[in-house]
Image (cartoon, rainbow, N blue to C red):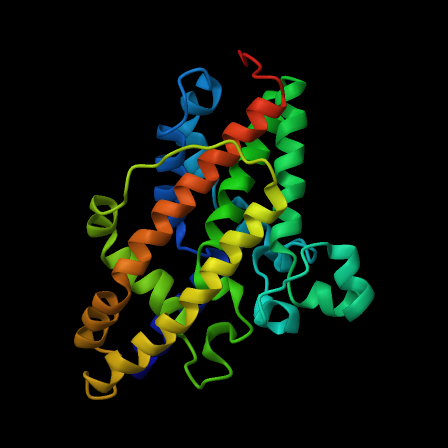
Length: 274
Ligand SMILES: [Zn+2]
């Protein structure tokens, strides 16, 4: 029995390492974003299945590429400027204050997302289908990660608050178990052209961070009402306390991703990719 439990814990730990929202979560966000795109962006729409399947490739690269890991998070609340509502979004400026090591260590999610968005724009301009698919799948991943509140906090996996495992309990256990309810409650998306992509990304990062405390409180609340055990009752209450925020985050993730696909396509001159 003990071994079975250990195996389960290990599996959750491994899958958490591999897939940020869980493969299913990333797929839902990617599909919804692509379905909302205008018909003229037919190349992306026709490759919806491929992009959904590859929306977790970036996570899989972590094991072989040491530069990959910090592209998936930003411990934004490490920075005192963020905590008083004046986050510095310019990476060079932040490095001048904190040094490169710290900025690297705290994660580079939004700056990496900008790079992927720019690469996608170039690929669209050049009509390079292989690159379009590669960068579009990666963009789906990083935008999805940035809407997972736990990717935007210093208290990674509850290490600082004694809530180890909260990351997997939220994004794997309850998301996978309630995926149908989640899909039924995602709002229709509205696509906009993003004038200032970096600020846009920092805005959704800040929003995600503001929900992280809700997940931590929900975890404590659920434990309190389930005999202090991660049992069926715990997961039922945990979902009940986090689902409304999760519906919101999934809807926003899809909308923001679609808006960025659209922005790349507009900036590339609305190419007809055949
Ligand atoms: Zn990730």
